[in-house]
Image (cartoon, rainbow, N blue to C red; front, side, top):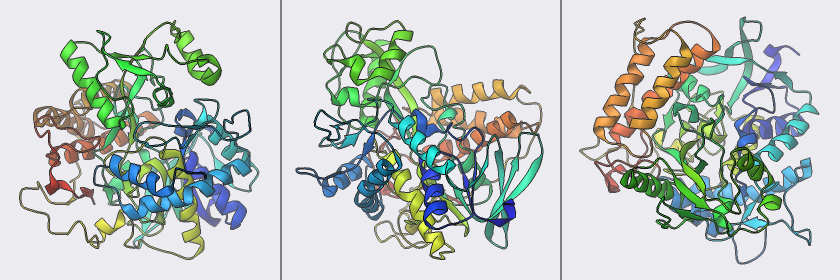
Length: 530
């Protein structure tokens, strides 16, 4: 099958992309291609230690409670309609995954074990292998995709969107032999994940360089909520990258956070932004680079969390005896390519789902374990819309903001909001010689700058300093290797992150400004880049 024949090209091989590919090839008999810059099982999904949040039946839980928890975590920027789709359709998608062969943890009676995580009022999280949920979800989906007739392009790096007559017609990509070729398709679904590699301390793999968001920004596709980078509060503070993640389930089972004096300082089951801020403030006050997670009271740790136990053993730590050093690490990109409830972007023919997208589900801060669920729900929804002949966005979900039909957030932004709601970033001309030629060194500089000046805590002075380094990185672009392209993508996304953080003069969700510490009702709107 040639690429010209594709009905759907999926970029990325995580939970959203593979869920869509399976649905398209199996249910609707579409001609599908999957393109990934690594190998098929190498997506960020496999790193996910958290579980899948879904109401799978039984009192006292309900989808209404799941919705309420999600809206609360999103700090006023969630789209309630999008969240309703997530919580209502999520349980069926989890059952679909089980049908595909995914094995989740069960108790002695054979019932699914449900855990509670930060921000959830009740236990509704299913896990696999204690902390290996992402790996199990990825395994089941990869097996399912390999049974279809999908065309699989591995070690292929997507460079730019092909836009013709106002519609996305495919992509250009660099292939393993070094050649650059077009892959054409009637529809392109972007599921390339987030941009955790913007930061020097992250739980994300090396591949998480914001490629899909950067391509969208360069093509003028609407991107929003990009300032909301969620930091996970319990990344193991060791000298390795990505940082090993100590799953939120540990705190759900009773692990406690202590400072270096042994004092508790925060409710461990608050949403991630609250806990990460509390940790950062406490570390600053005490002059330390970590706090501790005390899991000594958890029984059968090795049996319940075998992967984490193995990681701790490599670091010389025994959770039964030792307090575990932890610190916040960049974890999840809450914003991205704006979509409607079917996954359609502002560019007809271009769709997005999962972490790369801004569907309206997460708002200013993602509720724990909603990420895998979002991919399972919205990836297949895009396929359903394509099959139904949908060719462009509708005024639903986060797309209501872009199309000017959001009744709760009028188009006329109040005075005092810098630049209004819609932002156009002018291209930065290339001026060689401003940074080291080695893309790896330039990437390290960029990551360090974002971590120090646009991380958990921000202010105008720090953000201006970060903006200068980001602009210099973009001006210094050179070369045509994959590392150069990744650096360009990181800097492109970083420019939007820093610009939006400067414009949002308040603290909300995962965005905290020390110079504007309060939440301001003036900013109950998305900042959209077009």
